Structures are given as C-alpha cells and as structure tokens.
Image 1 (cartoon, rainbow, N blue to C red):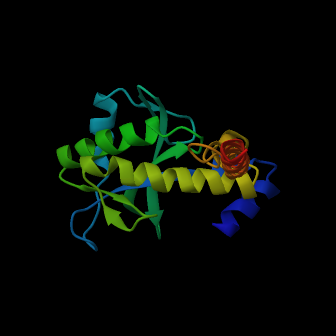
Image 2: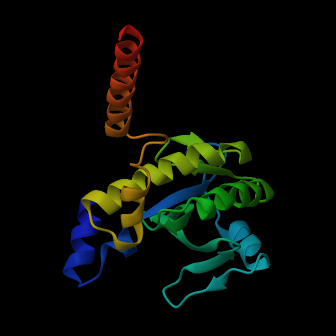
Length: 185
C-alpha cells in the first residue's frame, strides 16, 4: 500500500485514486484458477461500462463502483470492486448486497480483505463499519478530501456533553441546598 501511495504521488496523482475500499470476487476454493469472464459478462448485463484504462464502471443506486481484474504474475486471481472513501456508507452497503448476488450468480465468492472474511448479504453492517473506520482514518490522518467528513462525523457523543452534565449537577446541588436552607429558616 505504501509503495502504491508513493508511486501515485510521484506521478502527480492524488490519494483519492489509491485509497479506496475494495471487495474481491474470488473462486470458492482458494488456489483454484480464476476466470474473470463470467463476472465481466454479468457486470455488462447489469450495465457496467468499459473505461479507457481497462476497468469497468458499475453504476449502482448510491454511486459508482470501479471494477478491474486483479493480476498476480500476469494471471487473474480475482476481480476488484472498489468504492471511494466518503463519510456515507450507503454505497458500500449496496455493494455488499449486489456483490454477493453477482458472485453467487457466477459461482464464486465475495471477500472483504480488510476483514479477511467471505461475505454474505447479511454482512453489510459489518462491512459498513470497517469501511467507515477506513474512511475516518483516511480523512483524519491522510487528508483524503472525500473522507474528511468521516473523521468529524462520528466524534460527537450522543446525548449531553460531559461539561453540560457537570453544570446541571452543580445547579441541582445549589437548588437542593437552597430548598434545605429555606425549610430550616
């Protein structure tokens, strides 16, 4: 990852291109050969458009997913499904549901490398939490502009702030003290 970031920056690119959350469509059995043709055919049937760089752009209701082959030693080992890091989890939730269906239709599995887990449609909340943590880190520490709001959005605690609770406690103490003094006098 560090090498990818440095190479992207050396070419004058931005981190938003490198820092994306990705899911992988892989064979059900690790180590078996992977043929990306069925996945690409299913994606084309679902409206994915070919891009000049060899990737595909899959438009879902909540946004766009970049799709490309993952190669090792020149041979395809998986298909990457990448989404941009932002403060919203709607797209990644939709991608989990649609990606699981896509993988099932192709006789493959959908994997989240961040969680090291094969996914099913019920894992959308788990993936969304991991995605949000990644986006928060990217916004807070790496300055990825699309994810900056994630670093601020989740820090507000629910309910009253601790300072407000202390002030209310002090006010209640003096009110009770006033009532006691009134009763005595």
